[in-house]
Image 1 (tube, rainbow, N blue to C red):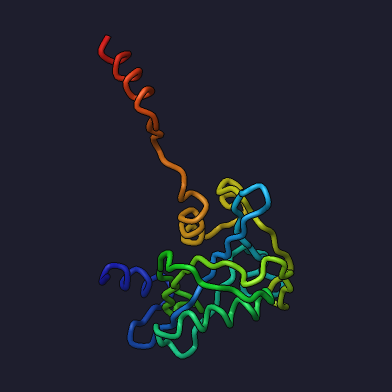
Image 2: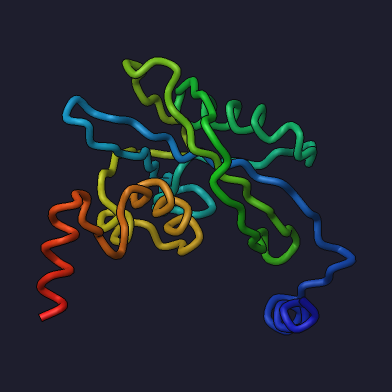
Length: 182
């Protein structure tokens, strides 16, 4: 950590005694369509926002900083940014980042969520001007710039995929073993 602090200090004037620590909650909202395909909601920041035209999933600061209130914060932020009522399903992961020109260290806690009512419509706040439901991680790779957000979404969209697929039936396993013994 010392090397990281030294690097930040030289780069942006980071001072660990002055920096404010804030918790952030993020919602990867999962929707399953009629064909059984999963998609997640992405929203694009408005052009006049402090992080213009960047795609992300709904997320926001938890001003009180109490880790026990992260889920309340999550629900509030999603409602403010998208108009959706959500149900958090499970915790996915967390990551840290420096923001506000080095004056804020944020720890973002990300949760897998679903909509309370699948018929709800997305109603964006003024912070965002576009939304889309994405089904593939390839699409996420193209439109999201922030690697930490990509990693979080990949945990959701790629959870059923394996690097190696194994045969499922005894007959296929035996046939494969015979071929390899030759």
